[in-house]
Length: 135
Image (tube, rainbow, N blue to C red; front, top):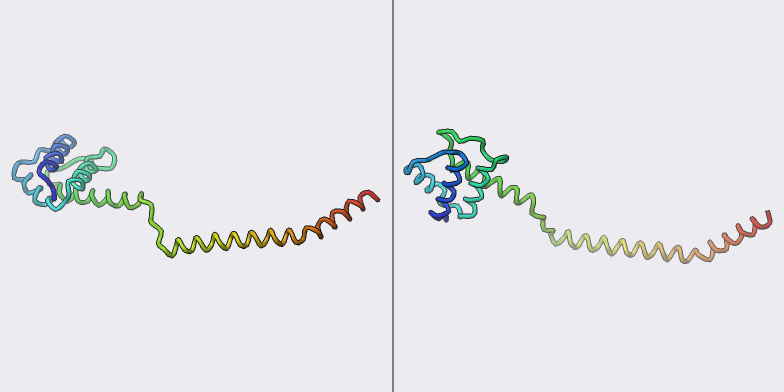
């Protein structure tokens, strides 16, 4: 629940950034609309609202500030979701383990086949060397 202290900080930001001075009645109405938010959510939304690149360019007399704050809170949550690494589900972890096991097994089998062919390959190389010497 939004504290009056955090709300006061948010109002200071709105006043400083937009040079917009809401009257006492308007501020009380905004507080009622924004009351369900936590202090952190509210301040995040206000900071984004006033951000020079991502926020509003200007506030007009009929701008719905509480709605804008909620909108920017949603944008902040969306960005957090994008930046947060997605946790893998259990089946994805198991699948990766199986792929690694299968890869290791296949690699080992390929090496074993090569080692089994080594005597044949050595004999072939010897024959080629002998043919070169005779030529």
